[in-house]
Image (cartoon, rainbow, N blue to C red; front, side):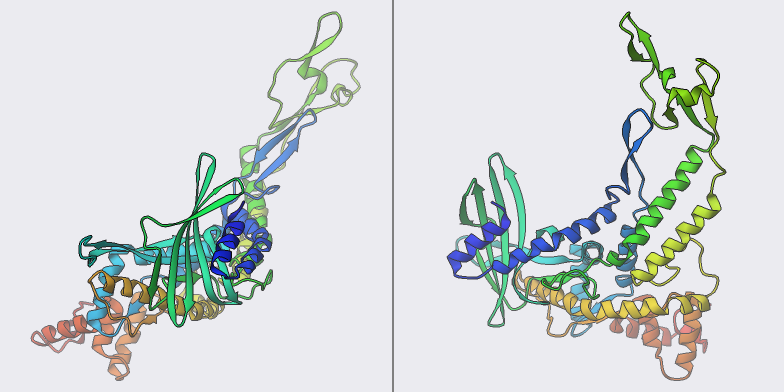
Length: 481
């Protein structure tokens, strides 16, 4: 009995229809394919079978794991230090900033983006360990938590395309002859987020449901306690589920070419001296009257290839011969060109923009701006989807903080993205100084942008600098240039 059967049986007790969850099984084949490229474990590409004339043998190609590089590049580009969360005012923003540090918010968001862009979908799940007085049942405090949930643990139950009304997060454990599922079902009902926490114990064809011992069985919140992280791209493979397509799904051919070319380059270097062809009789010796044959040595793999004895004799009677054939010149330039072209192909098809994974840095900021225009347009598309999801999880974290006695007002949540292309900081500052002179940019905004200060912190610093004003605008900004 698998998790689908368990969810169906549980739904029957609640008179709820979870049958659509089974649609996920038709999508797994694509996710598995993406996982193989992401992990560098593609059959026939990263692992293969060779034949040296005597026997077959397996060999492994080392993968450059281009799929992983692409997803990490996207996550870094989206969730850099320039990605900011602001609340109602500086006080509430600072409260959330402190919470960010405690739960590793930025690291978790970045990690979820890598998994989500790799597998098509990941999730962030907010929860809290709440401390209560057993006598009065009042909340004494607690700890807010944020977990990254991978694709394999996410089961949409009731949904309409991208609109999810009910979703389950599942953890599976094997205890001897029993399979134990820890299931958290999140459902939106009457504008409230309801959570059911259950334990399903499966033995054979029997399943028993019980309440979670560590988490309250049913909880109600004002906001959903999760958000879905996925790329905002059209799904070419299935439109039956609210799952996204892997960011590198259309780059699979390029990923394959990079791995094959890199492997050939390594092989040319490591085996660049020669390949030896051995006559078949050379590796055998006749023993006994019946003429049984025994191998003289076992390792005939790698650079040694067995050929029929007739070819080895070369018309010289029964004299055993070795034939040595040098490997052609190492094809560094040709293979390196294939790698670079394939990297650019992968970048273009994954939305990163040409040159994003090029090992040769751009010469000037002008070149960067020109080559990254497509990438920045794609980045904006992903931000449009992710903004709503990040706001949702921020509100969930703030609600949990309020529950444990550390209130954070999340009535207003704003996400700020840094959408400019990467240019020298010095050039950015010069432009900002010109904008200050022209009255379109304030000194406080300058400190907020380049020093990461809040508006209150920047205002306080500027007031302090006024008393030391020497008429030098750089000094007034707190800099020495």
